[in-house]
Amino acid sequence: MRYLLMCLCLLGSLSIAAPLGAEDAKPPKALVDARAALAAKDYDKACTLAEAAMAGKPSKVHYREAVVIRGEGYLGQKNTKKGVAWLREVLLLLEANVPLSDAEQDLWTRARKAIGAASPDDAGLHKKMSKQSGKMVSISKKWLKKDPKAAERAALAALALDPASKRARAAFDAARKAMGAVPQELLEVAKMAGWRGLTDKNWPRENGVLVGFVDKTAMMLTTEREWTGNFDVVLEARVIEFYSNNGPPLFALACPFVSDSRYVTLSCMAAQAELYEWTSKRDGKTHAKKAYKELGKKVDPKDWVRYELRARDDELIALVNGNEIGRQLRPDYLKTFRIGMKVQFCKVEVRSVKIVRR
Image (cartoon, rainbow, N blue to C red; front, side, top):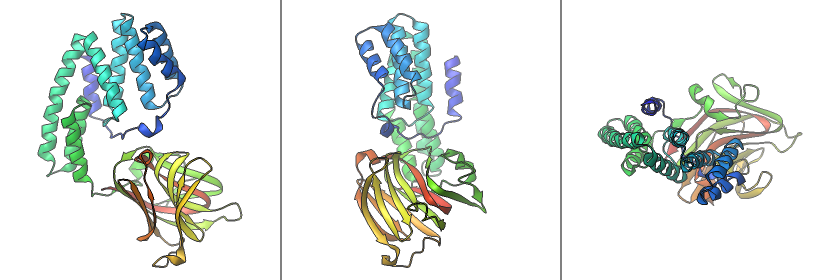
């Protein structure tokens, strides 16, 4: 009953979490060894190694896998109480962060199977949750045309009840598609807590705009949330001052942003705009660049300028004030991403950052 109540509470506070895959390429050694120990049925060792993996600050999906292994290890030791407790914890973690990536969905299915075999009460509960998931899918379909946002929330609740449900995922995707043409403003005051690296010192809000000020180094601000699929990201900004004496100044829309060493920037520099792909923390490659005077309409970075990156399947397109700067391929590792802004040796004002799904 306690587990059911916790599940119901989670439904009231769900937030959409995009797949994590891009950050989770390499598991920690303790987790690799825990997998091997579990496969060898050395349950004591598996539990110990899983605990070590959890303590080592792994990525989210690897942390959750360590919890699953710990739960399975306890079940292997015939310690049903501890095993069920750990598996319940990971199920709650996953159900609160739908929709899941493929890796997370596999973990959820694995944990649910293990806990169902160990606890008849949990097996019965999961059966009821799946049934309720189907009802939420029906509600989502009913509201799809009238109110896509309400349909999305119903589908999200359906996924929380049964993350592996193909019907729930299809309902969620349909709702997101129906909402797709609606731009989402990412600089609303209520949403500013969703940015990593945001400080009042370097990113104050003045007269309704966000001010980025970095005169001696470089600074990156990124969203907490991740996205996938096709999209347009549109940023409106103007440079107040370039500090060229301190180093090469630039302001950039960083998207897709995968990690500190892998991201794409549409950069505003002193004399030109540039489409650049970072492949390490210090290096990358230029895909396109144009001097402002080459653009169809005069562009002055100290006026309000519209920077736009469009993602279409395997291609990225960069535009400044509607003028195309260039294009580049979009490999798979750039298809799960965050959105960022980079400031280096300059002061800039940003009045809007919007994403539109396509």
